[in-house]
Image (cartoon, rainbow, N blue to C red):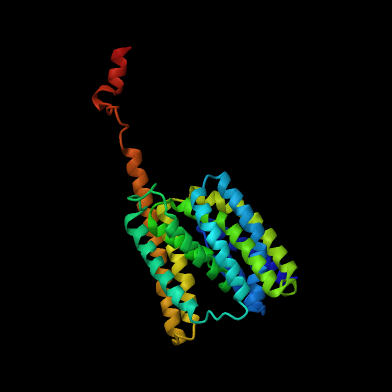
Length: 316
């Protein structure tokens, strides 16, 4: 019973984070299942089965909030489904011990770029509104789907930073489009796991608990991302990407560091992330105050000499 309650709590908060930032549901939930003792393939299969429901609910919520770019969804979902099915069917024998830290290194670099870009300069607007090309979205979807299935999560960490870095789509629509397209990825990965593992390797009770708690969190997350300042959202996403992938790199056999050094690295990342988010919040409030103080175009500011109480008395 304690395990089910823990799963429900993790599923709720994982979906809350995923629906707000476009990532972390699969990584968080799969990590918990691995800690419990589930083998990697079964853990990924259970999480993806639950994600069929959570991503559907999240997609509907984001659509109702106007957070979805359907052109991006159409162009990224199909190649993502191909990658997810391939990754699921070959997970039982495919080794990702070397590929995972290398991919995480690339994602960390993207995370640093996003964190610095949004914190220092705010929302990228130079290319905003320009269409994202299929030759960019198709390979992105293929790689993201494959990493997602083989790693138990990765669609968001791969897709979200790449779309944010392009500067051609608002952060809230990046999150909404990634979350909506993930329904197709979860469905395709689940089919791949059923082919490769059968239904015996999937814990349906755990999947149901993750599903129910995630569905409950989906509309809350969509509401949060709708009202979250883009500059602050970009800084928050950058920090999540860095932290998530630092854990993968430091946990790999390729990098062996003393515990004190790892603790110091995490402390520095947390401090830098907190400082960046605080700076972005301050900059957002300053920009909002400056925008509110600007006079409306075509309306001259009132002359204080003509609006005092003596003037009103004279008019009467």
